[in-house]
Length: 278
Image 1 (cartoon, helix red, strand yellow):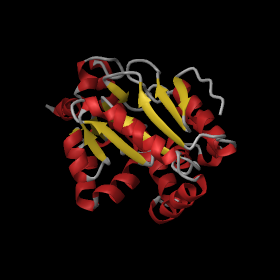
Image 2 (cartoon, rainbow, N blue to C red):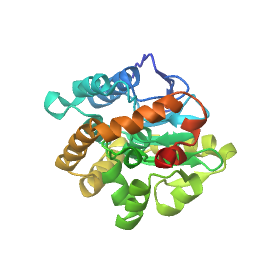
Image 3 (cartoon, rainbow, N blue to C red):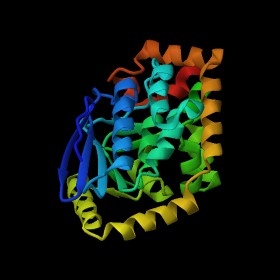
């Protein structure tokens, strides 16, 4: 499968497509990255060729993907609409399509995966994380919004009701060990072992007869993926809440302190959303 993108670096080896997010130091899910992900997902549906597994990781050691580009919500939503149509225009509905691609997808997470970045990882079939360096979080309720791109749906199914409420309503960061214990990720691995483990697993799966792997994924998806109507509802609620004055006030406050720049606030965003009212 031929791939050429402005914000994703790719290489292919033994049936595995390695897709490395390279959209600046934060890997914000903005116009360019969403456009390239839409193109990649479209190619996987249309003709994956000999690609059997896709591994998504990051060129940034500190951020898998910080979150969506909060300054470009209408613009990246328009890009997402190219995959799902104008009636379902949202990042959440697009990531629901990513979850359904006819190949296995693996998120390999180093650094921070928060908000939409975490929801991108959750849309993959598996998540493996660096024990020393990975951080996960859904910070949206700390700003007055809620996860609108699948976070509620996936985390409730993975963590169970009470832990999902803790993770989403609490809006705190989870390190890789706690994320593994809660079921957020498949495994937390020592950073030095992460690349080798994921590559071996990806190539193992890629070497199996594809019809069996596809059938297994399709059957598991039928049992476990959220209904489209629920994803659609979360996306609509996110769009509504992010426009409210209190939410805008909190986001503006965070922006003044360094939101969407590679500094201390983004490194400790779970703490930053708590400090607004102090």
